[in-house]
Image (cartoon, rainbow, N blue to C red):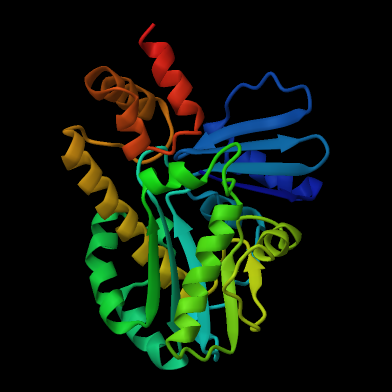
Length: 296
């Protein structure tokens, strides 16, 4: 679900109220002058002049009333040889942590565009599984997977890593290996998961280092094809690991860290005991405690 907020003139708000009168809804918000719901998009006009559009595609409705999105740089138009790195699995209780670094040059752009490469968060798992093998074959990359068992050995109180430093270590190692294999990028971009200060703090602890500067950028998978490629390959690696773990324990392990994960974790505890979570999940997540509470 997306949200767009922008300021409108009194005349624009008046036009909005007239055009959406038949979609008007009641509101108890004392600061709202008008509210409506159109095809799944909620609209609220405030007395301050700000208007919010919230829904699956809020920009479609907002554009009717003067909203203009900031122009987005086309990732395939960047004339750079670029290493992009991304991770998948960090927010999922079950499954490992996958990190991939990929080298994409301008010569790859046409192919990637023809394959429909995009931010993997916008692709369903079926499309991810279809694209990843093609990308693995065509694009130079290094992929690392930290299994749940190994993750639990190194991440946690009193252990070598916390949830951030372990990602720094994996991103650094994947990029290092790609550079060692002969990659010569003009730029290196990591999809930001922490601040530059934090990244550099944890990087000092790493043995394998390189001189190339790195850029940490939020939502980089939507701005750079190299990061998008890494995101897709990493997602597939994570899904394959989740499939393998599911087969081993005889339960379908869900992605994510919601109630369903709590339920499955409780079943694993009942069937196999604590060691099952050590082997399939990121043990320090709150889901572990919730699973135990379900057994009381």
